[in-house]
Image (tube, rainbow, N blue to C red; front, side, top):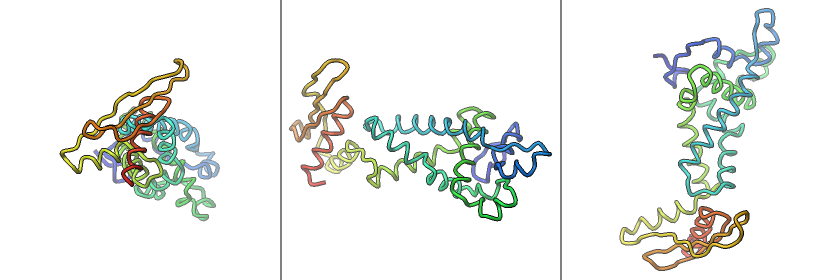
Length: 226
């Protein structure tokens, strides 16, 4: 099996899908008499395919993050600058079909053009080989981008940070315990205690247990001078 863009082991059954994904509107406009179609419709679908793959991945791999932080993390991964970075890493610009004016104006390296093309290629993979084909194309990048974003502190998983510190001393154990639950079902509040070696170190409050655990871990880190 050949490698798509020299990096991903996949062979399209319908090569027309890939051709469409790589066709910029400027090329399509110049070649309408040949039946050329732009990748804009595929880009529309690819945006949703990317969003689902990203959301599913970070939901599973960052179980301690509350909904608000998951939203921030997803936004950091699917933004234009991130997709541009991915496109550059696989040399996507070299394969794009661009109109003469667009190519002369640097379209092959334009962030918006490349980011849109990534989404179009994802849609083409999805239509040709299903979600697994699309996921395999970009999953490693999503995981790495998520890890880099969290590590840089733009989205902080306080529970993971606290766990890593505690694990350095093998004699210490880390535990979270529900202290209080109050309020009506539509407006619950949870108070969680974080314990080290069965001793309460700090506590946090939130609208969900996971949110309260993150708040407790953050409070504990502050007490530890982190």
